[in-house]
Length: 83
Image (cartoon, rainbow, N blue to C red; front, top):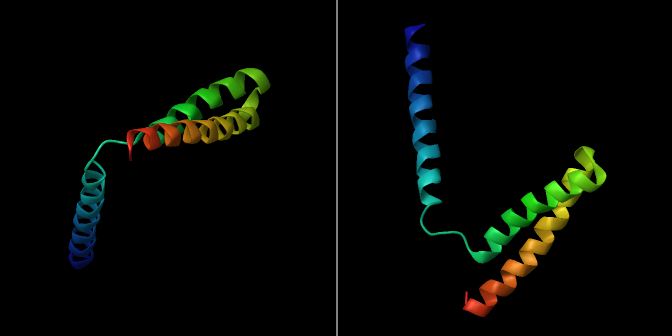
C-alpha cells in the first residue's frame, strides 16, 4: 500500500513538472498579431453569432467565422510588420 502511494506521488510530481515546463516555455515570446486576431475574432464572432442566431450553434458558428476573419486580418498585419 505504501509503495503504491509513493509511486503515484512520484508520478504526480513528474506530471506537475512537465506541465509547468510546458506552460513556462509558452511564455518565451508574446503572441503574434495573427494569434491575437484569431482570439479576438473568435470572441467577437461568438458574441455576434449568439445575438443573431442564439443557442450554441450560432455561438460556435460565429466564433468560427470570427476566427477565420481575425486570422486573415492578423496575418496581413504580421506580413506588413515583416514577421
